[in-house]
Image (cartoon, rainbow, N blue to C red; front, side, top):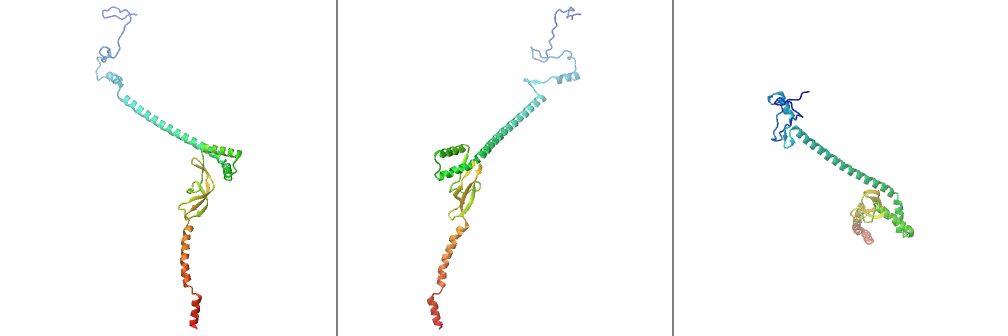
Length: 244
């Protein structure tokens, strides 16, 4: 195999190194590839070469690729924000469902204990809550209170049909609004859930109570006039004598 000859026609010994770097390391200018010096600027080869060379400004690729990259960044950012919002809503929904499920289970268990609490309350009213029964009753009441059970229903409260059950309505001229005057059975709440409405007697401004004083006054005014018109025995007798 023949070795390449140098400029003097002598064979060159050793490896041949050719610098194919497109940018001159000394001047920083773009080198012209070998064989392209004689190519016309409007030739197809020059056009293909120009398309293959990306324009580099300050280390950033300008043109369609940069715009496409920016659009992808905006699209991915919007997707990330949407996913974060969906996850936040999911966490809130799960927490709300968990609280509702716990409240429902607690209400179901505590609801079965309401008759026992009624017995404890009646025993306390009759001074029969003493000894070991008193300790057990107070412990049970403290337990259901820690679970969120609230007792309500007192005389003097304003009647609320959402939480009260009216057993009797008593007209009262002194009542401006429907008011609880007696509690037959207290009510219980857990959170905003009504386990049992309070059964009460309600006093309200009735029409009969308002009309009673007026009718009584009318009767009292009519009695003196009626007595004055009735003739007495003397007057009737005198009239008879005159006719005779």
